[in-house]
Image (tube, rainbow, N blue to C red; front, side, top):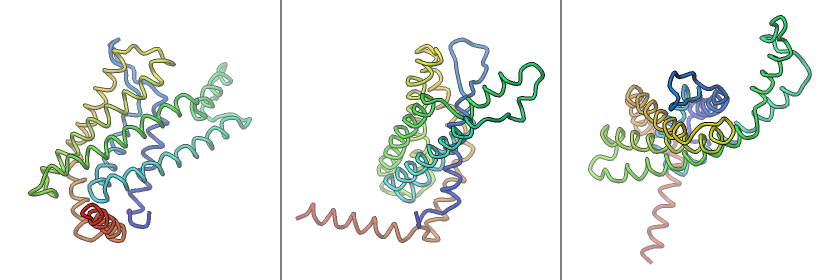
Length: 242
């Protein structure tokens, strides 16, 4: 935690929290076989952050930061739930004749439901592990220039595609299929569409991510942790040779 830039951690946690809150709202689409939720608006940033963390610090560190973000998200979900059960009236509920109905709806939205929290938490944890490991593994394939642009683009694109597909499909199967009545076709098309949107975002933001990792390496960001990791790898290699 001392080695990872604070701003990156803060933005990552905010993206996870916002993603799970926005997942409560579905997007109206004029076709029956496609379904999406508004979590897709911000979910790309979470995967973008995990890619740069994995590239610079490795999959273990990126996954640890992910677990931290999930725990913080669950804590604030609890606080929102407590706020939702406190007697009171939301400012947006003052619509003549519908005050009580709107107020209850807002309480339920911000208070959350157990299956949405459970589904989004499980889906993101599983997809984060898949994303981080695949990102690291793909990077290992580039022996000649592992820090080059081509290596970064390939590891980011492929890992994000796999991770986002797993995230969307897991959430759709755990929550949308059972509680919102989505068909299996809608679950799969949601996962594929979410993956494609993520890849479009990667096309726009891959170079800033690449530039950030180059800047971190040039300025020895997180050197304390990186030295510790290199020491562990050397020790592991020595034990294997023995």
